[in-house]
Image 1: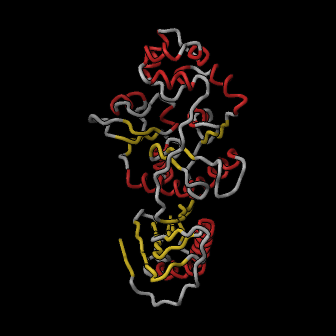
Image 2: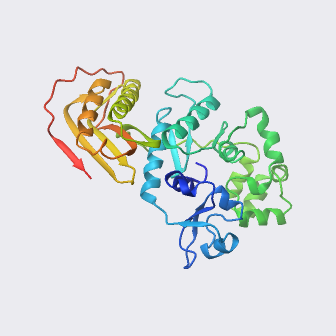
Length: 355
């Protein structure tokens, strides 16, 4: 994600858009910059910089306290998009992850096209901008993701990898920090081509165990797998709207679209669930959830939609303007190639409400 925390603040506060936004501590205290918008970065402001220094470099900067609960929520929303394509997702942080799409749920043979689709889905679902890097290993994919920020997509193909690495400045190598960069430059290592001249034994002598890694990446070798430790507990979809809505008829159509998407994901995974949860965020950011647990597993669009519609009646949607809507289906039963029976007509009780 591009300038993730700051971009979320600019999305949620239109008055911040186009202005230098700094997320972090107060410049009057000992606060530190957690994130800076691209407008703030133009003044040399970056993460981990003391806020007192940031305000000197840009007196007009808008300083915003972090809202980590919101950032985590958006991160989960983005991650759900990833899981529509592959279960091999390895998060690095709230705003970054590796995906292995060698085999993917969309059966799309092009990783570049998948990256393009994911970026479009993120923009549509969250209103935020993402950049992506595509390659045949983690190291190169990570570097590619930084080549065309913000809102970019870059690919490094096998036939181009060797030449690309040889020309790459050593400071641009992922895993080479400021101190290591300085040490390497003192040794005459300024590019990938310079690094490639060193033997593995000599690199280990100078850099310890990391020398093995530096030797391999100079040759585009990175056999690390994308490790996903996720056990799927729910399938959900949500969207933050560009304009707040109060038209219940429009909201109903939108809930049906979400239900269709969830049902489609269920079919692809041969899964079903019991608990439908509706999430509603109002114009002033108040957020409510309403849940209902069925005695039997459901997976069809109509069952999900009907439940969501009933739950909607327990909120103030319509009377209050809505900025986000979401539906999730949890308490999953994953069946390899299995099918599920018809959902019985059930009384609407066993309800769980959270404000």
